[in-house]
Length: 252
Image (cartoon, rainbow, N blue to C red; front, side, top):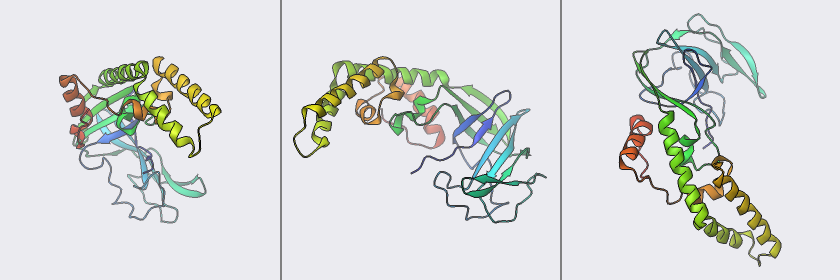
């Protein structure tokens, strides 16, 4: 499935986070204003992208982009949209709606790329800043910075990768597999030399803590047998990032 365009959150005093996960119903229900179908857009199957804000501890719908080309524009909380260019189409764009929302639930909001060469299982580790917001009837009740927890997990990943790299467990196995996959014919000396350079460069990146720059075909093998050994940390990590959001925790 194509990675979806994420909604944005603007906490007070900040320029914007992506909403990675939320619990319960969606923070904003578009159905009172627009009905499906929307434009066929693989990066946004829900058909709209919202920007939310927290002002005076209240959750607001700030801006909205709706992937509708032909339907008559609707007024939302007094705000009228404009048609704007989007690739080869026109979409509806709302600004400064400031609609108070009645959302109850938790949100994980993050900064940082969600795809950094890591297997999807580990993409949460690519975020340098991650915060959990808790709302009740649209009012912000709690705000917790989880960046330290993510950093601890990231360090555990890097330690594992370095160990595998130094012992050459995963790289050796992948090298053998790659050799066989290059061609049904005999692997040439030139092929072997290219692979040797490829793995040497990957090893340098891993040892320099630049795991996000390592190709996926290597990181996938590096973490094939990765386990979280600290039971207390494992429980806390799974609770914060998976169980609270209705996902099955990973059995690291």
